[in-house]
Length: 305
Ligand code: SF4
Image (cartoon, rainbow, N blue to C red; front, side, top):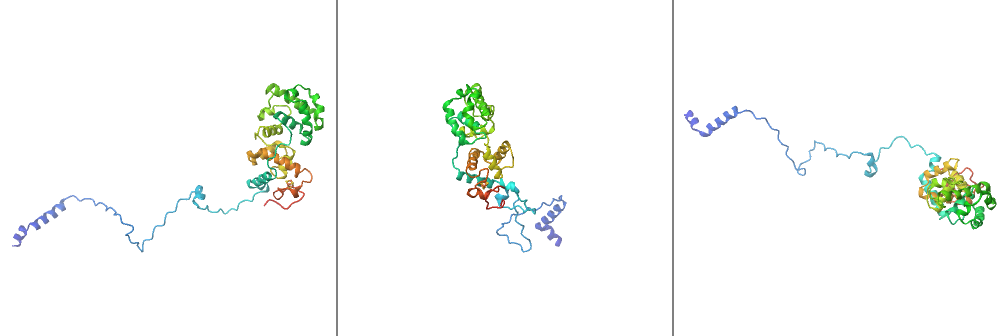
């Protein structure tokens, strides 16, 4: 009876067949279950699993300022700046220039002149002589010899009596007449606006060339270093050099180029009025509390702060 029931039941028979064929079929590899995305909002935070730490942005020292990330402080203390470094620090130079601008606004060359040639002659005559003395000589001189051609036609001896009071008149006569001849021969009678060409003229060195380029042509090729600029730039510790050439180079390193012309004029005026060679008038000086010159006549400061 049971045999008959078993054979007749189609459901049972098909089940038996499928189990049999499943056993005979080759086994399939189990594929890993794909991770299902879970809604992070719905997901409950587990009490046991610690939250991963938020990732910090990588530190780039170049971006430290922008990102506000502070560099770790170095344990080494910063070395103290020397007096020389403080003396030529940008902050002090800026303050110095500000005070000079306020005290000597729109200063000009003190030598009287109406042309580049007259300024060249006046500057040659001003060597080892005051501008006041030169200004007494040049009006008559230029009235007597109005052009470069007139000077070029002279023998140096003919000029000596006209410029005697400026001192060193023999050498100065040779320089002025020699410069005039050279200008006629090589520069069509015109004063060149070029440092090298100016230096090719007899009796013209860098100081004279800088005066002509700066005051007549408005060209800042260098800095005029006369006796006042020499003395005051050393008193103000802007340089420790002791030749005009080196002092000019030192000043060119620390004074902005657009101030070269005015700065030299301002120091020249300061040297005439207050920072005179002997007994400078420090009590009246607008630079007093940033000046530490050894020969100050009055002081409110000990050293660089
Ligand atoms: S304080 Fe005296 S030494 Fe210094 S710049 Fe002024 S006048 Fe010259």
